[in-house]
Length: 159
Image (cartoon, rainbow, N blue to C red; front, side):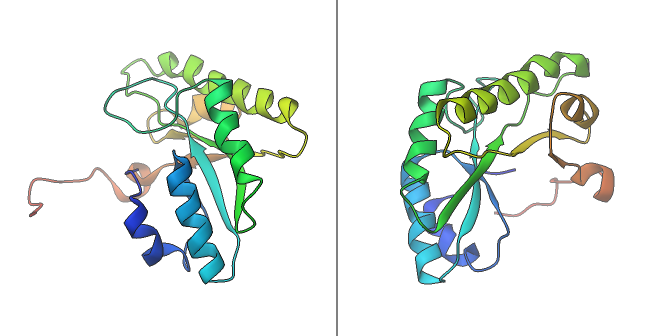
């Protein structure tokens, strides 16, 4: 999953069923603007960097940081916050991902308890190599592209 740049939202706003990588108020406001332009409500997930990896995007895994975005979303009529998303670090021992997935679920539950206007029901976590643990920890959406399409080969990529 790659980071969604604000200038790309206009190209996808009329086609997506959900944007899973919202990590800033600026991006959320851009999605609102494009949703209004296309007269549709765009479901989103807040991307949370639970593993706190420098190479990944996402808000800090704190209740305060997540609630700030969540409560801002309640003011945007063309944005519908549905839940949270994270990508765990890759570990050979998949069991090491469990605390990361558990923390995202706990964070979602804390957010729902903090504000009864939030009805967060989606947890997007888990990929081909760790989806079973993610599901055990409450994932409702897994990303299993490698299992379906096979490993990606980036060796011939031209920029």
